[in-house]
Structures are given as structure tokens and as C-alpha cells.
Length: 117
Image (tube, rainbow, N blue to C red; front, top):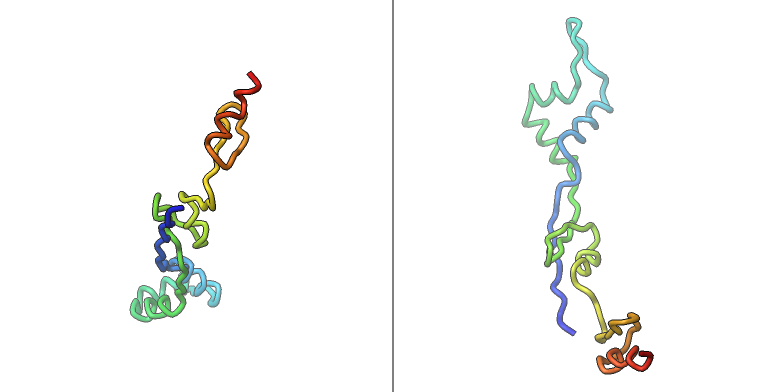
């Protein structure tokens, strides 16, 4: 049995800036000035972008994503990434080309349906 190639792991941001803006807007009411209505998140981002970015940084969480070492598809589970394109097999199995019956050795699989013909 050959060694399995371990998946790569990377951390990705769990939330987008839009998620953070929705969080702010859910916490505070819209602001009305002179007949115009503004979202609180837009006001903070426009008037104090540093405060907005610091708040977003504090709000942000990260999660691990595992990448299949063969096809580079991302998975949330490390084991799924490990076996995405690689199979775990303790011992090799052989199948009869006629009926598909599985055998532990090549000779038995080749002789499976020969006696029935």
C-alpha cells in the first residue's frame, strides 16, 4: 500500500464585509437626516474607515479548509480531503471481468466465469 498524500490546510475568513455591515445595521436603527435615510454601517465606513476596519477585524473569525492534494478541491473536513481522490485499501482486490465478483488474487478472478462457459 502506498502512502497517502496529506491534504493542505489553510485558514479562510468566515465572514464577509457585508456580513459585518448587516450586523451593525441590525444593532442600530437607520439614521434619517433631512428626509434622507442612511444605514449605520455606511455612515461609520464613510466617516471613520479606520474604526470600521478595526471593528470588522474584531468581528472576523477564521475557519480551516482542507485541500485535496490531487485535485485541489476544498473540503471542510480533513478526512474528506484526504480520501477525495485517494483510496484507502488494506489489500488489493481483483474483480472478475465478466460478473464483477471480487477476489483476493488475480488468478481466482480470471478463472471465475471461465468454468461456466
